[in-house]
Image (cartoon, rainbow, N blue to C red; front, side, top):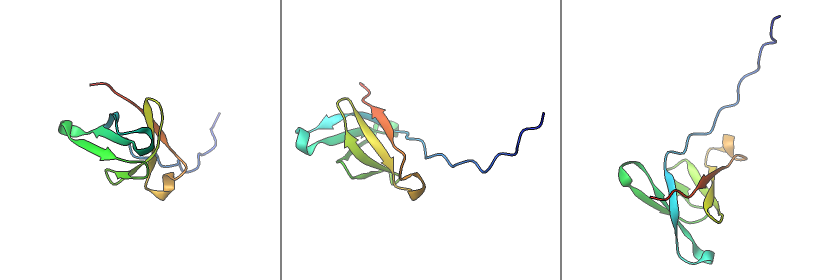
Length: 85
């Protein structure tokens, strides 16, 4: 039996290659700490762009919600759980 041809596949958002390792500051002014390649650290607040492709959307208890700068993925998010070093 032949399968019907599939339509174009939806592009996937870029993979997040850094880790969320925790936050600094009080709850109303949290700053996320991310670890990238070669132990490079990046700090970001809610709304900030990280590595030109991702936006920190929200802090949760032991994770952060990351969105995407690219408009094609504006409705998609990824939850990064805190990874202990």
